[in-house]
Image (cartoon, rainbow, N blue to C red; front, side, top):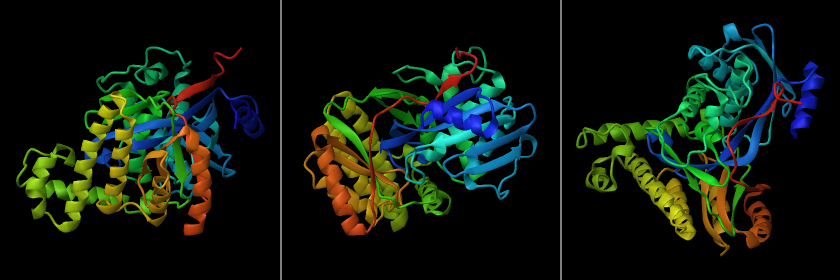
Amino acid sequence: MTFSEIRQQFHQRFGGSPDRVVQAPGRVNLIGGHTDYNDGFVLPVAIDKHVTIAASRRSDRRVVLYASDFDQTCEFPLDAILQNDGEPTWSDYPKGVAHFLMQANQPVTGMNAVIRGNVPIASGLGSSAAIEVASAFAFLSLARGLSSHSQGSDLAMDEFNSNSATFIEAGLELKLATLCQRAENEFVGVNCGIMDQAISILGKADHALVLDCRSLNYERVPLKLGDFRIMVCDTKVKRELVSSEYNKRRAECEKGVEILRQWLPAISALRDVSLDDFKKYEASLPSLTQKRCRYVIEENDRVLRAVKALKEGELRTFGSLMNASHIGLRNDYQVSCKELDTMVEIALANDSVIGVRMTGAGFGGCTVNLVHQNAVDNLTNQIMTEYPQKTGIVPEIYVCKPSDGAAIVFNSNEAA
């Protein structure tokens, strides 16, 4: 849907024109799965798929949301936001964002909004973070009357679009990412890390983002793909994180830290455990805990090596680290599934694929592939033929471009 189309849809639903149109991208995580909530390192890119919201300010304290993808409407009062109120599940994300914005003493006003997205839902591409971030941009920009060049507020929109390419101290953009993460953790009930929200805000075209999920320091790393492309393959196996094994994995990692503190009292997360130290004490851990810890500790090391490979232009080394990551996710962290593994096997049989792994939380969702541009059509045909034969499911395939983060894309204050 183009911006003019969502504005037209807003007019049809609410009358008049929206004051703002904002958008926030989904993401694909190149490497660093399940390390974020262990205070580790991740390396995602924002992709050219978005949640878009057209919104106007209301004179009262009510919020009316129309999700055009579902043809569903939700209405709630800002002064009495309730969880589990029988409204559609998707509405929990903007409601949670509004709740925590007000808790943070940010001005929030009523609004009418049309929400539309093309980030595949429940596919591991950050659709929930995209709606959270887009909702935050809509609420904040309406309440503050901001233009996209506004100055002077604690959460001014211009602060969300820094182009710094060096490690910096956690800035205002991370405050908003943290707030959106809280909405998902405490309102929706998914104990996700901060990666998805951070990349949706901080993404930059043709760059990956290496994020230290403890300090929230980050660096935008140029993604020099050359003749290679990022292909995302959707298994069409949906998973609902609230009811999946996700929260169990987090608890298992915390158990590992608690046990390892007997010998490493200074640690507070698996991020603090070196590979050498883990090898000294892993035999003392229960078998399942040992597997979970091994994967996370090795994956943090892989992320740092992957960043080094990108900076040195060693794309094939980067790809081999992606392959190793999937093996760990499959064998030790056990968050893959038959369909994801099948998709990976088909890709690896193609010599033009230099790296492939599942992306997202797992138990379904997507794989991410680095494939030579001349082989994109061939690999697409292979997957569209072989994957249904082996699984009975017709997949979807997207060739994605590393893209910019969230933005105000229409502002009535600046319109001609």
